[in-house]
Length: 219
Image (cartoon, rainbow, N blue to C red; front, side, top):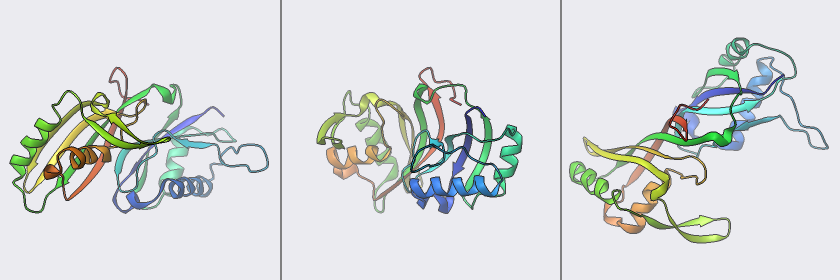
């Protein structure tokens, strides 16, 4: 059977499931749904599945993409219907379809988030954050495979905006998904490193949609 894709969401309590546990959960769901996954060959066979952009623990998403192959022929609707009743709370199968585009074409992610402050004027802080992110470059120290290095994250931010809502500051952004990959947590790290007085007490993020380089929805 040709390579297929599952579009799914991970919200609520499910955000605390690690990537490896998520892979195990999805594998078991396919098994219970009587959708037999194709396995790799060799001494340690494993299910032929992969998630396009692994999600950080604690983050929500309504646009996760998993690739898989089945041994037998089943229609996308059959697979989706079977999976829906087998997934745990917080993980929902949204769409199953044939894979036609390469994952490397996925370029941008639209996210939203909340910066929470205990004792700060949210309106003032939103203005300060918008000003901070309007800079031509934002160079921070970040972990790489070779250790700690300086990196300018501004080219990986296509769009970003902050606005006050009650005591919180809401963030809406479009950031690079690949080459380079920008973890939303680095948006907080940048503030903590360069303007610690603007740093939130707590922050959380949610993926809303994924796009290609031309800002067309990626599927």
